[in-house]
Length: 293
Image 1: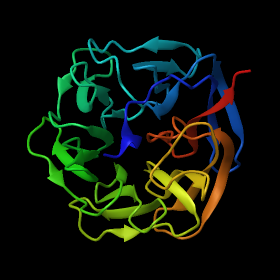
Image 2: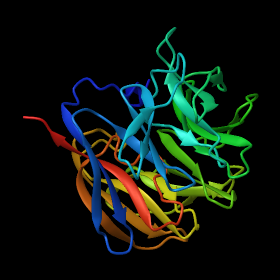
Image 3: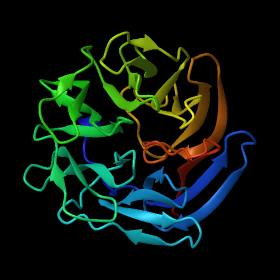
């Protein structure tokens, strides 16, 4: 069994976390806050006023005006990793929560303002990554019978649909804003590369072809750009996205082609796991890290 998709634990992460934004045109970085502990994976809310991040199992909102954080009440769902996704209308948030009974990740949904979680995927492990623009479907990576593939499921639960069927890790599925495509990353060609398929799983097309290990494609709200995180070849195993590495945040056109490096930083796991685009497609939120002495 692939052990690389296990619970995201804070043990061993002796770091300071720096919450930042970057202008995707100028490349100018802005530090919003520094934390003396681990935070990960900021989402940007639809109104542009808050970020949502996870820290040691809980979700928090970060007010961009006051620079203050507030916990989101989630009852027993207090072992969430950095796979949280906001619903298109921002009324709810879906999470990958590691259940108390067996420690395996399952997908739950609860109100963004806080509330009782509802189980969506009884089968485990399941790792959330995408919510369709029409609000009806979730996309996720799941291990079934020893293989990690991409699945979808109705937002209210039901029968899951398998979209990929290749040896090795297929991960990070996220919808394009028009709902026509799902972007994802796959090791099927050796290195981890970005792929795109129709929302029903058909026409799977490789979108990057370079000597890096590329993870977690996020399409901008205007549909024009894709941001992702890149690890150097040889620095990590193709199927791993560890913490505490020198990585790059890259941009490419959603139609494919050459990439450009937007940010070089110390990070990796937790930096850009979720869609972190601002609503106007002008900025990205991310987390960089510093090792404590």
